[in-house]
Every structure is written in C-alpha cells, then in structure tokens.
Image 1 (cartoon, one colour):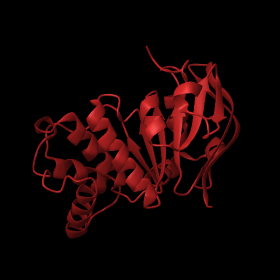
Image 2 (spheres, one colour):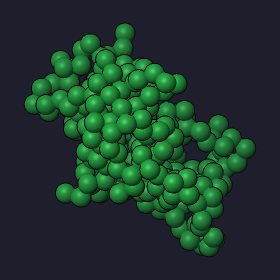
Image 3 (tube, rainbow, N blue to C red):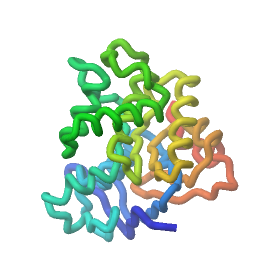
Image 4 (cartoon, rainbow, N blue to C red):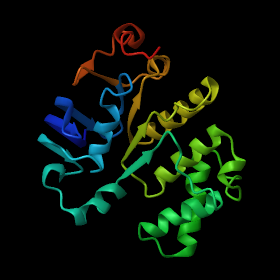
Length: 237
C-alpha cells in the first residue's frame, strides 16, 4: 500500500504549550482514519500540521514525501493542492453562487481554461449529489447541502487525501449519516480520508482505523473493540 502520511515520534505545540507528543501515524492510500477525542485534545492541531498551518515541533513528519520539518514556504501551495480540506464551519463565500465559489478556488490554484473549469465543477457537484444547486448562493442551502458543497470544493483538485475536521458537528443525525456515506464512498474510490470527530456513534457505524487523542497522546485502538466502549471517556457530555 502506498504511504501518503508518515509521522514518527512527533510533538506538536500551540502557543508554546504541548498539545500532542510521541505521535506515530501512517496513512495509506484509500484508508479511512478517525482521530477521536474531546474538544481540545489536539485533533485539529494535528490535522493542521498536515497542510503546514501548524508547525511540527519535533520528530519526523512526511506528507506526500514533503518533509514538514524542513518545508520551504514556496512548496506549501503544491503540498496543499494534494489535500482536500473539509471544515466544520463551511467557509463558503456568501456573496456569490456555488459555481462561482468553486470557480474561485480553481482559478486561485492555477486553472485558466474556462471550459475545463466548468467541467471540473460539474464533475465534483455531481459526485456529491448537488449537480442542480450550482446557481444558488450558500444561504439558500441547508446545512447538509452546504457541507456537501464543502466536500465538492475539497475534491476540486482531485486530492489523494481529504482532511475533515468535525464535518458532522453542525448537522442533524440523519444528515450526518448521509455525509458519512458520501465520505466513505469517496474513500472507496481510492481517496484517503482522515477525519477528526467526537461522535462515537458514527465511528461505530462507519468503521475505520481509529486513534484516540487524550492526555497529550495519540493511541491506536483495536478495531475489534467497540468504539463506544473504548472511548466512553472521550465522548462529550
């Protein structure tokens, strides 16, 4: 299996405070991986190191053969083009249509041919089941529809890895399950997914390799055990 991410004995700081240490993480092509734990346990900080928003304090960290410890500023855009990011808070531009939101991202990442841009937008909207919503503006869509658009945006540059930070956090249970089905479908097509969540119900239903972030550590959990039992302490009140 091709390795996309490899962390060895990594320590992560935020504002000079250790949030995670001794992190070992390997992400292979086509894997679905959960980072579980309470808010503040370091999940988001770890995800942000993958696209060089948060620096690696110590250890070895490689993403697509980029050495994050010695990454040059000029290489960051190329690294980020290989990664699709799904935010909990959508971050869509409210003053333009969905098609224009997606075109803005493509143009910002070097796409110039208008026909190719339109074709790529049609492709990703169709992938997430939103092919007839491109003319609408974000406020005209439900929360679940907006999150589907965010996933479409993450797919624009055909990334090998999708990072999803609490993507179901603002969604009702039924919509959250629909989003999980979509993410797992994308994963089955060969795109790796690394998802931070504290929703153990979803982790138990949609199984994947699972890590628990707790007490400044990240520990791999045996898939044979039920996440709801392993992570009872990590679930929010």
